[in-house]
Each structure stands twice: as C-alpha cells, then as structure tokens.
Length: 204
Image (tube, rainbow, N blue to C red; front, side, top):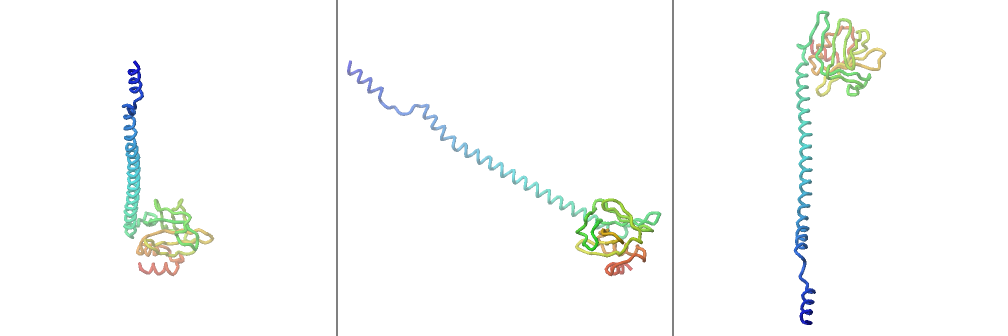
C-alpha cells in the first residue's frame, strides 16, 4: 500500500513540460511579429505611391498650364499685326492688343495697379482714345500729355500719360511694326517722346 502511494506521488509530481495549448500560443505570438512588420511596410508603400501620384499630377498640371499659356500667348502674338486692325463706319480703329494696364506715372508697366489680358480694349477714335482695363474709359486727344514707347522681352508698350492725372494707360501691342502704325494713326498734335518718334519713323 505504501509502495503504491509512493508511486502515485512520484507520478503526480513529475514535470511533463508545457501543455499543447501553451505551445500554440507561443507559436502564434512569434508569427504576429512578421505580420505587423508587413502591415507597416504596406502602409509605407501606399503612402509613397500616393505621394508619387500627387507629385506626378501636380507636375502634369503645371506643364499643361504652361503649354496652354504658351499656346494662347503665341496665338495672341500672331494677331498683333496691322492687318488685324478693324475700322468701323465712324472711323474708329480697334487695335489688337495683348494686354492693357493702368499704372502710376513715371513707373514701369510691371508696377501697374490694374491689368487686363482677358478682354483688353484699345480703340483710336476721331476725337480721342477708348480703352478698357478694369472698366471702359475714354480720353480726348487734348487730355494726352505724352505718348511714350517702352520695350522689353515680348512687350512693346504704348504708354499714355494725361494732364493732371497720376495714373496712366499702357497698351502692350507686342510688335514694333504694329506700334509704329498705331502711332501714325494718332493726330499730329498728340505729343510723342523721342522713343515714340523713333518707333513711328520705322513705319514711315
């Protein structure tokens, strides 16, 4: 009887190792580590691809706008010729201009306080000039103090200053031959600067 109790005691106190359930948990925890890593890598890859797609879209938009602007600008310059001047029955000559500006007397056109390159207007009428920058206005020839010509890259500007006015009017004609022809359309009583006289002489 004592031998059986001793044998039973020895059997119950013997260490048999971890149970099968613990083995499964240990394996499961080890397998979770690479899954977490792959998930993080997946999110990082998605983020990188989205960033590349955004940069590509932004670049394509920029290039497309630049191409469209260049094409529209080229068409506008192609229109800047004497043949595109239209004269109505009253003798008013509508000049094809690239842009119009309202600036400050004595300052270059790029300091303009207002500009219009969407629907600019410049008309030489029998009694004065009519133009549109922010809104349509008219000035009689007697109000014109001087007409100057300022040239830059891609610009040939006629700059009109007026008596008693701090603001001036500038029209970008885009081409010297057109500017020379427009200056010749103005009455001889309108004062021209030395540069304007030189450009006007090209068309004579």
